[in-house]
Image 1 (cartoon, helix red, strand yellow):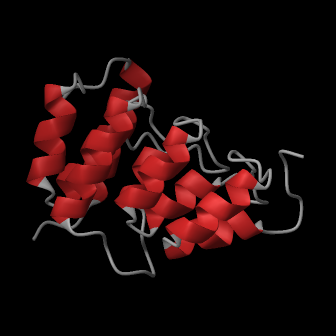
Image 2 (cartoon, helix red, strand yellow):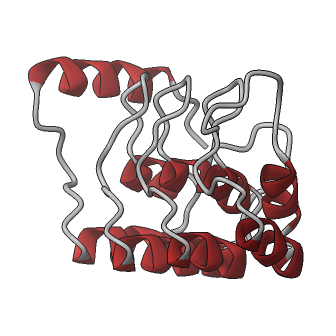
Length: 162
């Protein structure tokens, strides 16, 4: 069963915690690597959100889909930087996760429903190494369609200047 209607699975919980031995056990017993919780997040999303590169790689080795979008339109990669109430991922860990995800073919420019891309998010958090890596893998510094361009200008104009 791929979809979970009432919260997370054991695999999602182990992935959030970075418990690789438990993740491996659950996968060996038939846990679905791409199970989706009520918010549209997968175990890979959780491992990325909590900053566990080794768990990210383990899930990808077991065939996790890199580009499942959640309810906000975010792919797992974008979740590195979407942390309102949790400690932010450090720059080195973010760059490592970007490298792993790009090695497994993750789409690097998929925006969420607000038009935020991984490059925009990395730049907003001051993660230069991750931004450089995204750019070296082909991420664009300019939006491609006029609607997105207008939305990003509006978003930037509303952001506080430090």
